[in-house]
Length: 537
Image 1 (cartoon, helix red, strand yellow):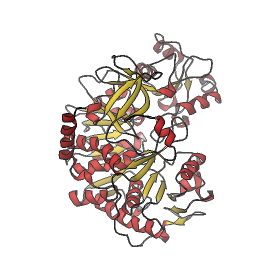
Image 2: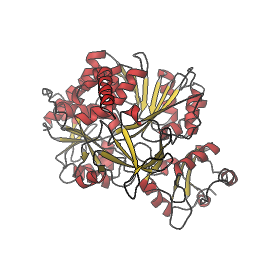
Image 3: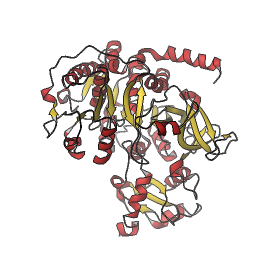
């Protein structure tokens, strides 16, 4: 980026930033101060305040953050302490995180989907901090039996080894304490697709940097009377950065956490959002909503997915379900360590059927990208030549906690090695993760898209490897109907050789909290389960 380009970007950022500049601990209060009783609707009550129900406004959240900061202070939390949050996804995760930040502590969000051993290791890396959890998490992760936890707080009842939240309610909230922009303000983690998740440290500056493209996009694309709907995990960096957009724009928010299509259909039909954001695999499972008699997607003019490339079939069905004149599908390729790396758009009339491994333009995400040869580190220039994707931008995190060498291994001067493989066409084109590479199918993600297009009965398809075999397709179908071998053979006839497909019900696949299939864990699963012909007689 040239000096003039950087100055222009800085001016644009300041102009569009608006109310999004509040610190993490004061963010809910900033929304309430600027926008008043701005609605936020939920699909389930908050564990820490069930009496509030599911129809709230941001003034409720702001008061809850202040009250909760008093509870945490009464539990002994002080500025600089780490507070781990391990509970079912909901907006109270955000309220707890902001409450910790409000008193100068550092919230650490941990997804409840991990197994007990993984959670114990993450808590140990955090120094066995004050840990806030709900009863299901306490039981599933055996938190009451862990040695060394500074204190365990249960938000929804009594449990062995835990202090019930009811004993802390009513404590006075201390005065807000802010941390400087270069200090650690929050901790999240990677998805764990390739093993034990890595803990990601966010400073005030990096969190604001990740939120910048969201705030600017919201300023440009949304109006206050728009309704934003999301269905996201709340143990993620997106949980922390997303409300900056709400603060800047002031749009009502339907904050869902249950991806079940039936549950989502009822809420979407009721609130009729104009922007709908979820993960690509959730959109894949929501394709059936395009045929729903209540037309829950009819008013959506912006569909948005983050982190992974969506399938072309999914994009077409989402856009076809909208009754708006010019709906668009916005796709952000992103990583928790950096935020958005590129952003692309597709419209119903033009480009919706293109290969969606073209994931947009880095400039829109305020990010620079370069490609390097994986073996030599030499910069790759020619279109169509694949290389490792390096990126740099304003949202780069502070490093992996407790793993400085791993952090250094991903840094090349001022560039961050994403671990992904891609190339440049007109846009940035994503080929997949380097660790998931399939030598017989270099562009395996595009093959997955093609087969999903040809077999509409599939609700998921993942290509992976097994020793001494051709690439192995793992499939899920709608209603778990057995896949017709003849249809599969016809669909794959012109593709490179593959093993016979292995079929699983979706809940049996190893996934992350963001519904990404953990390919390394899937390989282990295949070694211990019978082929599809034995599972579906």
